[in-house]
Amino acid sequence: MCGEATGGILDFCTVYRFLDVFPGWLESIVVLDGLASWLAYALAGFFLAFLVINTVVMATALNTWFERRMLARFQARLGPNRWGPYGLLQPLADVAKLITKEDTVPDAADRPVFNIAPIAFLAPTLLVVAVIPFGENSFLGKLNVGILFIVGVTSLNTLAIFMGGWASRNKYAMLGAMRGVAMLISYEVPMALAITGVLLLGGSLALSSIVEAQQVPFLLVQPLGFLVFLAAASAEMSRTPFDQIEAESELGAGYHTEYSGMKFAIFQLAEFMAPIITALILVTLYLSGAKAVGPIPGQLMFVGKVVIVVFGMLWVRATWPRLRVDQIMGLAWKGLFGLALVNLFVVAIEVQVFRDLNGVVSTQELWVMAGINWMVTAGALVLFANILGQRKLRRPEPVPSPLANMSAEAD
Amino acid sequence: MGEAMSLGHGTEAALITDVVFWAIAVSTIIAAIAVVQLNDLFRAALFLIVSFLGVAAMFVLLRAEFLAAVQVLIYVGAISVLIIFAILMTRDVEEGSPSNRIRVPAGVAAALFAAMAIFVAVSTEWNILDAAIDSGAVPVALANGIVDVFENTVPRIATLLVRDFVLAFEVASVLLLAAVIGALALVRGR
Image (cartoon, rainbow over all chains, first blue to last red; front, side, top):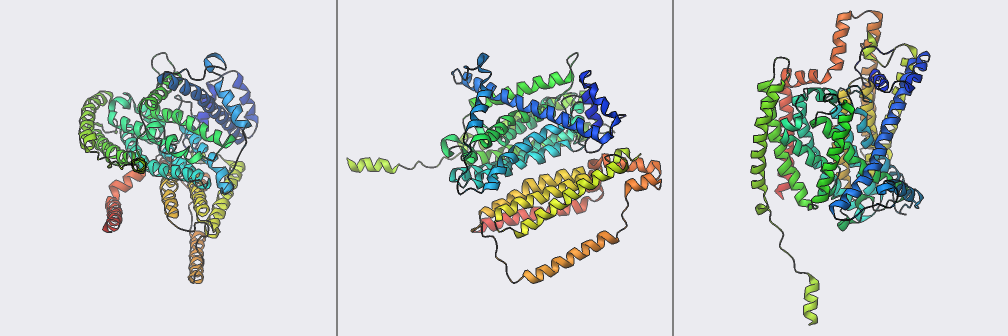
């Protein structure tokens, strides 16, 4: 039924090969051979999509627990530890609480937009999973333009945040949304430039080809691109060093201030899913994705790396304070943008010099590139830190509080 | 031979393609009409995004994946966000723009343009690839070459853009640069 791999939008043959990963109980799929082939395709597609989406959602539930426990550790607290061993059933309790909560909508709200916003926020996040290669033959869709798809689809999040903030008719929600949109579209620029460096070296837009090209993980070859991508991606998912959108101490809860019940739960789900999705992209682009190492199967390696990256990002969240609005925009346009350009420039020259006639860069030369790029990275970081360093940042003159005068007058 | 080129073969595949096409076409056009007719500017912008997405879906149906991804990235991700930003700077977002005297000439111009587009679409002899391959009008070697083009769109586009037609490409980017500098100059002038 399924011969050699074909190209196209969705390589369903690959879907079947993915099914082959679980032999035995999936033999029942073969019964479908009698039906029209497209029905079999559609069923297999639905089944796999169901499986993958639910895996991600379950992983997110686990991530909420993991994140809360770890944050508690970082802050010398205990964290949720009451229900289940080590508090593992806490996500269930959270879900039960959120489902039973009253679903309120502000009177002045733009109702249809208000209701669609959470869905529009979650859907793009989930769509990213469709093109991630979890293993050599395990992915939902093989897209020739996989990475462009990811960059395009994740930019839809910006709109959802805006929809939520606008439709709420709440000044804090609106402020959060405006800050968020300005920040998100700014950080898309360095992120796209960092990804371009990977594309140059990988020689393709397809994620599977990029993984294949990583004889040496691109983290080692392009440390500067990796750092820029990591920073921009943390901004894109708007977590603590960059959580201008929510900024609990300044804006209530930002764009979802007015949301409650299931809609709030969906926003939270998407927000806790973001680190996992980002880790999937990061592992695929920079940590040689699902490459098998010796006897360890690729899928296992992939999951392991994702867990490590998620923990790394959690570490960043736990230890960095929130940046100010102007600092955030300055970092994107003066810092990361320049660093990404330096990375792109250096990588472009190196690829031009080192590639052979087929446009492939050999493993040995990748190591040479890694050596050069680490020095370039150190140099660029020191240079940019000196240009943009703390000394140069002019703080606004502190304005004496009117309350201070009042107390003086009272005396 | 046509295997790699289409969702499948035979009547079912054609039926599915038809269904998908009409679903996309109708929703795109409805969204486009809503953009013009709605008074609430913000909702109009949201419908504009829906119609952009519909166009992207149409590109996917035409197997132009690269164009579809770029459409989403640029139009949905960037341009519509800018439009929404502009809307925020406008007063009376929910009133929308009242109609004015240009209404009639604009309608005539739009009708003329639609007539021209329909004329071009009808009178052009489209080369339907699958039909040509199935009927044997296209030799196998050539068909393989065409499949290769469809599967490696990006390198092909890259070769055309930054090698064969690099001058036009660079002129376009100089134009964009001039626009950016012009915008900055306008803002800083005050």
